[in-house]
Image (cartoon, rainbow, N blue to C red):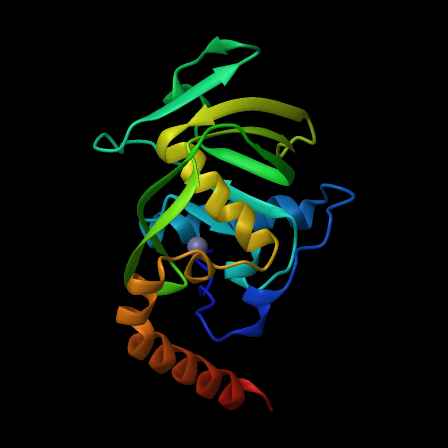
Length: 191
Ligand code: ZN
């Protein structure tokens, strides 16, 4: 089922996700719904907060993106990125490895807004997958950027918090408008 994507101004986006203790049928259903939602929105990543749940759960799929390369390393050996997509990351832990590099980013919770964000060029990731198995890998490029973006969501951090000041100033008016619109829609929804 395609779920509504929470937009900037919804307080859920500022909530830190709860640790997932057990992968229940409800969690598996949520993961399926998140994939449907992300595919429908043509995104490359989605965090649970973006579908209204503050949990340590995010998905990433960079399949088919050729203009922005990614690297993957499993057990110290290079691996083919697309063979390991999509990724389900439960309770992830991220360690930055490389130098920070600036690159363009967008976010499904901020439609049509983009900015330059500085993030570590490569990272080490530890997480559980949807089967509850421990996964560990290193990655770089767009994949590392996407995972850091999603991991931020799980901590209640948004890409505008890391955006270049000059980019954020340019977006300020749009940001304020979106926030007001989201808050108005939320008030209306309440009984
Ligand atoms: Zn986002």
